[in-house]
Image 1: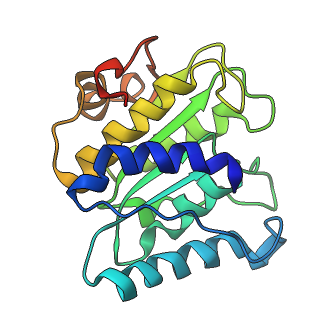
Image 2 (image 1 turned 90 degrees about the vertical axis):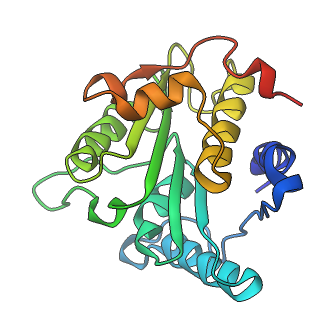
Length: 206
């Protein structure tokens, strides 16, 4: 939870003055817990709670790691308009375990961000998910943070700037920065392997 506060502060700074409300979700249970998929249920509850508090408003689900997988799977909630998944933890499909579904992402503007040197969550799995989703939803793109690991510490300012630009564009109607607009428009694999350039978003930093 504490790890999400810098991102929450950045999003609040980017859109709070225009009515963007940012909340950090505390999961009820630790871990994914197999078929219970507790984080997904919590993410759906959060979307319900946003509607209860604010009325008929669009919701953007943002998550990292396990929370990113939860955000992607909870995207089918009627209030969800966009999803930001950072370094998503995804299982390796096998003869027993099917790949995570992607149909719930149809109609949801979706951005995935992953470090190419992530040793905790496999970036190839997020690419493969994005590739499947792109066949159903053209409004999905994926950025690769070259030479960075799971925490994206080396390029944290650029990742935060990209997240802020995506949320401002998706939730508040601002034009996307050129690299993000290009990523959405580009066919795969280009739009799903877009490199996050050093110094991205310097003009957006607060």
